[in-house]
Image (cartoon, rainbow, N blue to C red):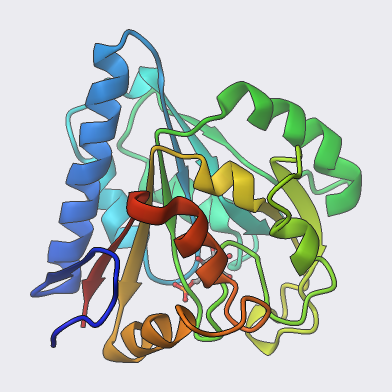
Length: 237
Ligand SMILES: O=C1O[C@H](COP(=O)(O)O)[C@@H](O)[C@H](O)[C@H]1O
């Protein structure tokens, strides 16, 4: 199927092939950082789509002790909850000995109460070499949900915050995980590479509609516009 998008959408014959290509792109970003003599910093999304791609990345022969992995967003649950993005990422990177994973959740606090602590950590990690985004069926990305009273704060281009606690309870797709922590638009879109991993003909059609939809209804459009040519989609049917 031809893409009608005005930005790069790389099509792959299968989901595993798309995941391997994403893993290879991330490995290139890691190699660049290490060649420059510094730790590599990658931020990853959660959800149901990306775990096999993360396993493919984790299987690569990299100097994992010089790689920081942060989360783009998480549901405000502890890692024993099946909805925990952190738990999925920790599982996927089990083979990556020495990697540092920076979780966003502090289960004894509310997301709002934890913002200052997590923002301090993110300030040390920014800017990220690469960020991996996903997209939900309501055109949300990260935890930027249509209808959320916190959407404007998430998408404020002038915010100094890297992450904010959000109430996503107005978005049916978010439930039952109403309370969340998410990176903000500037934190995501200043990254060297903003990579969207997307599966299914239905989601491709949603992405194509999102580029002309109001940002309040299709928050992913904010990332597409802010990242410009650094926004690349890895897609398989
Ligand atoms: O809730 C979330 O959903 C999005 C999309 O996930 P998917 O299940 O449709 O693959 C994800 O990118 C985000 O990290 C997650 O918190």
